[in-house]
Image (cartoon, rainbow, N blue to C red):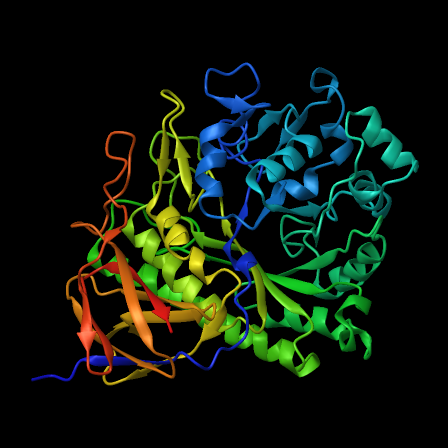
Length: 508
């Protein structure tokens, strides 16, 4: 009789804190993410608060959304913040050249975004314009947002209806500066990042965490150039450095950029290719982390994965520049695999932002433009099931026995992934069976603490491409899981094929 796979978890050996901010989100002026997603205007038939969709806010509050990145993305480096303040009917229009070549009327701007963050209970992450902006423009924007006295920008904010300053803890210094953010060389941008960061000043006690636009995929040279730009003493005190983090962008797809694969029409082989490419995030974190360790062994500089997720061909019949795609069980397991990687690198990964929140790429929510219906995607449910990991201490998960695997793209893909965390009184285990066809028996060897109770949930569906629609909103939704039972070492789990499960432990 084969010996089941065993996962050893030392419940009494907590590691680094998993920042809640790795569960961050991203809202760009792209397709129907802002307009028709978050923003419908005060006169819309859809219930709203000051133009912001009520049901979207309620759904995201259930995720305890920690931060929201805005206004881009590529849009950020074409965005001039003064165009998005003041009376909406007087705001100038612009062309959104990156995403559909449509005209943007700037009706959703700084005040609307900050209102959205307050409704969500999320901390704002503002991406500043380096590509087509100026140092002065960025400096004045943060003054407008955060200064309390009668400075010129604070006075302008009051003229536009907001007396008290906001808190803006996260600030992006550019976006994809190697591409749509300016087509710069690493050395060019490293100098600009230091310059721009200097003028993102801290007003009225607002402490800013500055994030320099980082690498795409495996561009280690970009990360090394940014890290080398620090003065020798900069990283001894993270607050003294010109910026406190660098970013990383990586998207999962099954084909080249010209034909990325389809969200719902895919083969079993493409199922595994997608999950293998999601697993590549682990290697990227290792490799970029190793570069950062050479310059910053004390890990004072954070790594922010502020764009990640699946990127498929757009749904047929939709605007190719709007990046609207469905979201299946496969996307959910891509998400769980990424989140496990972030948990395992909690000592360096301080934030991550899935792309994007509503109606774009690997969205949490889809809104129907005709009926106004709201759909929670399978990826949404993974985020909801993982709320217990927010600001919990990571626990190592050691696997014993033969981990099922298969060769994909010339590499070995493990078909099981797990991560765990503890708050002291409870622990949460996340378990992913990536095998398209076979269930998995897993023994949880739970050590160091007495487990007095457990409850489990599972996310799966009969078909690999199962997805939620207005007509079938719960085709992929979590349910109570009865496949967990006592074992001499702790618990035994019968994990269904192509499934994601969480097990919450009560600790004595």
